Length: 154
Length: 298
Image 1 (cartoon, rainbow over the protein chains, first blue to last red):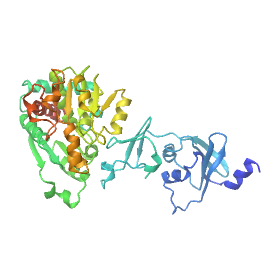
Image 2: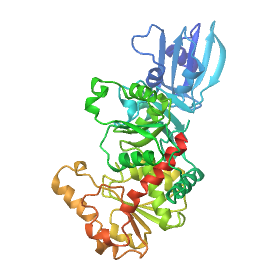
Image 3: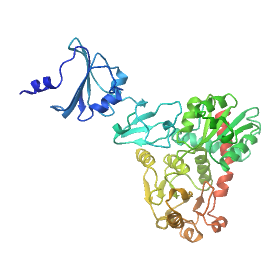
């Protein structure tokens, strides 16, 4: 079986929507979590994990039918899948292709690991993190997350 | 509108400017009516003696008035009012707010919701910028803030005064020695920031190894509640006690600072030594906080 045939079996094409390709292997479910796509979603989803990739070795792929992701949504993905590419599909063709770029500030995406942080209370605020070269810094309490960022995704 | 939330928000020039201003105030360079007609709100959700009273004194010396939340239990806080709402309401009553709160980042939140300047008077284990200013002020009264070696001793993990001071010291050409027992060392976020700022922090667990190199020894209280039992607390606390015998191995010009209150960490016999500067440090709170109040309300 050729690679192309294998891929076709794994994930069928979509007419309209978004294909997120080159997700770091094993991170597809976290990508969905960041996008707020849960088990109760009405969108038709296809997910493939640990697909062989010439570019990044192993990768995950997510296809979401009838939903075109906005730029601020896809940029959040860069947190855990910095090499991801986003393909906006219209009528089975790639209408737009773009990479992800991590935004300078993340609001409401990551929970502060510091239990003493004001953002972990009932106050009417969203968690806010500044993106720094080696991770994220809570803009309320200065706590720095340098690894396992996916564990803190809200 | 200028808020005083974290030392991380300051440049060295801004810190020096405030310290110079405080120096002029201490030398009598104020009229006493600069803040006449202004009202300062003091919101203390945690106990305080020096910080609160010195802010009140500073406001009084500048001719202003104070209002305060004296007892959290008697306020709407116990009804579940959020800090955000409290701040929005108090903003309508006062020209500036001084806030102490047990949660880290509380002052940053307050600044988001306030329509008047907010001064952070301590947020959990986070920051205490006005304390840092008076710490720097006291050091600068005795030594140049350049080329000196400073030892931070005690609870460096939870001590907010230490966190603020460490950030400030990274703006000056000083060497920092962090001396703390296991479990109470400087938090990773502070170490991380110091590395980013290319300031090396030397970590020690035994004060006697480094006392001879220090120009400043900044002592903080080791809190009993951080230990599982009284025996382990006393065991650690006794080995971090500053005594005349320890200071005998230090430089003649070594100064000892402490944000106070102190319990057993500084032997009372040290009080009469020329090294002891912690009561002078507490006095310096007034001109420094006068400078801060003028900065945000002047």
